[in-house]
Figure 1 (tube, rainbow, N blue to C red):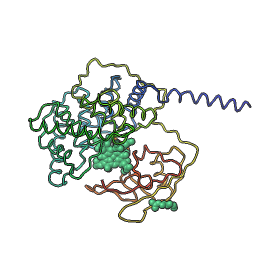
Figure 2: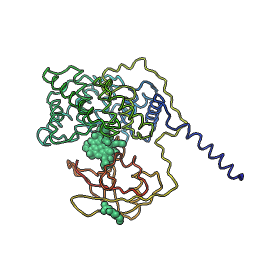
Figure 3: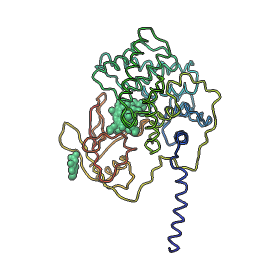
Figure 4: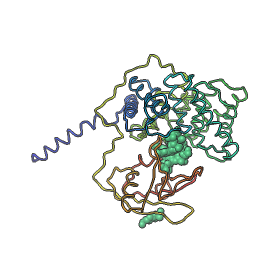
Length: 433
Ligand code: B12
Ligand SMILES: *[C@@H]1O[C@H](CO)[C@@H](O)[C@H](O)[C@H]1NC(C)=O
């Protein structure tokens, strides 16, 4: 062995050390702590968009860093209630969509903030107005479908409910109808779970008339029944990324004694250990489950005697840091806009291994000016692909750029999270939803 080799080995050894220390740990409590830490790290990263769902997850955890949580709440307020502070709203749109507003209200309750103030009441009124407009859309213009989605509609109901606010019975009725008849719209597992959480809160809040209460109880039975029935042999409900919300519903409805529950928990912990949960939004839906909590628990939070023991480990880079390989891979990228049979674009792209699909799109766009173009929009979930080759959904049009692995497997991750393999063929297809 020459001295150069020895030197190299030594360097490699030194390089490998921190990586080892930062790897995803084994053992359930270590895994949970690791996830908690990742979310806390995210909350401190000023380059990340503030996300009320991340705050809620930190608040529902057993371990806290109260100072960092307070700092994050302040940042949330700056964005969602910019008038309360001197700072200018940081980047985000002035009017948050209904779902974000609802998540923010959940966050305020999770901070035990009094919303019976002038500004708090404004937020509640705003959310009620959104729900009212959605109710009208469902009943008259939308043919059973809301402007946003039943997922956001459910979040809205849930947020008012955890604050103990009275909700228009007609608004509740529309969600019951959607769950019961579904208006020909197949509700996704995530949506069912969120609707179920809203129903579970309404039942517990006891704010409603008896007939409505009976209908709500029935709806809870149907939703939980269909979720339990949908469990796969792997233990997931829907796919792995809808399972956190499904498990939250099982927790909220006291079903954690059912045999399906530990099976679901094993699936979640297994995937966590394998590093499948890297999206902040999904991580924030998962952490409460691992702590045995659901969004329903926010309603009764007292914010007293909390364990202020979580310390940020600054020596690890965070699992979302991607290290690109030196090996090059080839990815085939095609664009389809049915019913047109021709492909708008179809080329192979060379990339370093470990690149995300977003990197692939960027490289394609750089290759020939005008050949490939795309646009994205920031969401709490990450960058959403909104336009390709100048084609985008017009206002109210229910179409989106679906990500597929050829020929027709829908990807379960978004453009910034998905890493194509060598020789993989990706199709961007303008699809209805
Ligand atoms: C409704 C919904 C959709 C609708 C949104 C339309 C609408 N106007 O509401 C449609 C059908 C368009 C959609 C598309 C996709 N979705 Co979707 N979607 C959801 C759902 C059920 C709710 C999202 C929501 O309203 N959040 C609440 C509000 C407050 O947050 P928001 O940030 O303002 O919401 C916006 C974004 O979430 C965005 N959005 C929706 N889905 C996705 C997915 C990604 C990756 C991104 C970046 C953004 C995004 O649309 C929302 C409305 O504007 C979630 C379920 C969940 N557990 O979160 C899945 C979910 C987020 N979607 C998912 C996926 C995989 C996709 C697709 C990538 C599927 C595909 N193969 O093409 C595409 C996005 C492709 C692209 N163009 O970039 C996964 C993400 C998993 C992960 N690992 O991160 C989830 C968790 C579902 C699941 N269990 O698999 N989705
Ligand atoms: C794109 O081109 C490749 C090879 O040139 C071909 O095999 C593939 O079927 C094409 N894809 C689409 C969606 O047309």
